Length: 454
Image 1 (tube, rainbow, N blue to C red):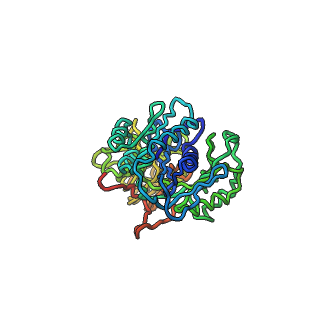
Image 2 (image 1 turned 90 degrees about the vertical axis):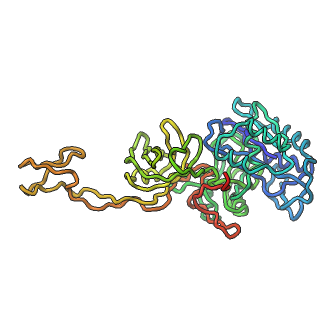
Image 3 (image 1 turned 45 degrees about the vertical axis):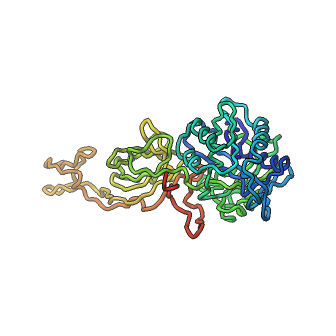
């Protein structure tokens, strides 16, 4: 089953509802969670998302194997099993839909832009439903038609746009997986100041191998939200045990519950490789090769804008103030540098809001040492203005600006650069995400890939 769009900027969190659903279905229907509960982020560029555009899904059945404690709520443990003992397609679909609908109606926020959706399917859904929703803009009617064809039950409220995310969360193929251990606040404390030891939170990445808990440059602790939602804090790692241990090590107010999610955080699943500037369009995140075509310009607030081009056109590259040191890298670019840009495309004008930048090749740079000397008079020449060359103050002879003595200057080093951790999106794979091997292959780098047939 999957659920989405039950929160709003004013409060609530779909993950909290997912935690409560896991507990409810276990206690009232004797259904076990198979594998970890799943927290799946979708296209971060859609304008109608609330905060992190996250949906939740649970695989349910009669558990087989050794159970593992993955969470707790109000003193009751939530366990998961590595597999289901028997397949019972469709046996509990209507009952799950009814029970889950009641919880959505109890907990979902009453807000004009909150449009909850619930999906219950007797079998896995095709991964294309996930890849389309994480990388593009999807129409509700198309998803509902696909679900009807697959005999998956679904229900929506206030228009039901959340059905898209609920279906995508079920369809997530988990080709790359990270984990988040999340703690939730007691209901009477929602909307009040969080009591968390921030100094302790700043140390966990170094001690447990977690990542993106805090921003070393600014000191900001990203694991602790500043919204009036039920989340107390969340810690991410490549594996579930370090995430849970790190979360438990941070002193805080007494939580009402905890859970470890399997997630698509920090996977770059949202990134689409495109072959040319002409294929860029708004509301998708791209990875694109090109050559710097225009010197960068610094704007109000410290924003830096350059331009990249290929044989099909040009597009601006924007590094905004929150991206931190990435602005300096963009500001050091010169025409001719070969780069790869990763970021969300916006129009008016067409711009890539940079998440990461790869400098593939940097052209030679030279800086002027001094004004040239007149060959006839042996005196220092005077500048005639920007790019206008030089003139001798005695004889009036003129030379081009290239006649000034110059020395070679260093440009940016080849390699990847990224936005500051506090400016990174949930889906962005940080450069310091620890390497992880699965089936002998290293799941690491900036591939932006997915199934080859997409």
